[in-house]
Amino acid sequence: MTRAPRFAAIDVGSNTVHLLVASCPPNRLPIPLLRRREFVQLGQDVIATGAIGSERLALASRTLRHQVEEARRAGVMAVAMGATQALRSANNGPEVAAQLAEGAGAGPVRILPPPVEAQLAFDGATMTISPGRGTVVLDIGGASAQIAYGPAGGACWDNSLPLGSGSVAQLAQSDPPTEEEWREMHGRVGQLLPDLLPLPDQPVALGTGGTITNLPRLLGKRRGAALRLRDVERVIESFRSHPLADLAERFGVDLERVRLCRGGALILAQMMDLLRLSSIRSSERGLRDGMIAALVARGEDWWRPLPASDQGAPGEAPAELVPVHG
Image 1 (cartoon, rainbow, N blue to C red):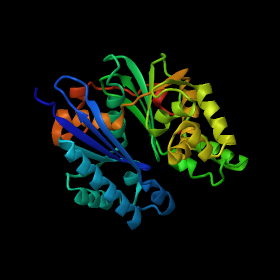
Image 2 (cartoon, rainbow, N blue to C red; image 1 turned 180 degrees about the vertical axis):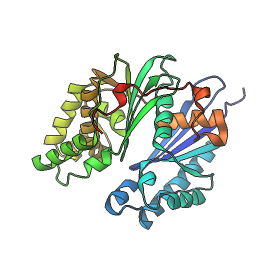
Image 3 (cartoon, helix red, strand yellow; image 1 turned 90 degrees about the vertical axis):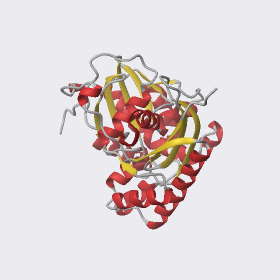
Image 4 (cartoon, rainbow, N blue to C red; image 1 turned 30 degrees about the horizontal axis):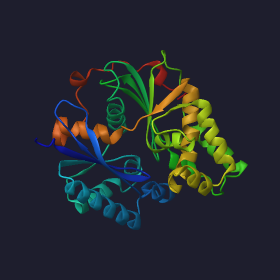
């Protein structure tokens, strides 16, 4: 039997560099075969100085090169490499992307505009949802967050926010955070998260990104379990009273991931409250799955947005994704 072709996607994010290798049988969903994640935290440099420094760049370059080598050993036909908020907002983002690409030797590293990132994450997260069904996808990254809404399998409307788990978590220097630090973190989320109107009907609600996929584990739930708002609030209370190391050891979650979840949980709780989502299910699929699907379908043009005629024009943005103020 002929083996199905394999493809890879590498997501250069604000906190991590992620690799996904998938088998892609014709007319079937990609089948994940290999995942790798390294905490590089490019976003910390951007927050501190506005640019990515040489040491962090060297670490990211080594990580990307090793992941490309691992993907090639797995027999992939092609690799899609995309960068998100850290490189979008860094003063030297294009130069960093070029140096990363040169070191990896697997083609360009594309800096994804927010609408492209949102659509690819939406495409990945909704792969198992019935086509046409109304779906909202919340994607909380290290330095940005996207709210995408639309029919599964079609074009989505998106609202991209300069708000991420890393940028909020870094406001806390104490462990657990002091009351003053918690107020600052909560205030930062409220300041940057617009007043969103509730969705008109109760859609399928999915979450992707490191925060949402790991929060169930911090509640003792299985991966992919549904989260209610009070579940997220329970986790926040744990963060308020327990050191990171205690939670990491108790639930078997990486210490750095627990730290980032402190900020991400505050963002998720306010998003769910504003959108009046009764629950949200964490999706194991997301941006990298969407990148692979686009790579299979469009080759080197995977990162270009599809013409509206090919994907279905979204038309006028629904009121629920338009901020009430500003």
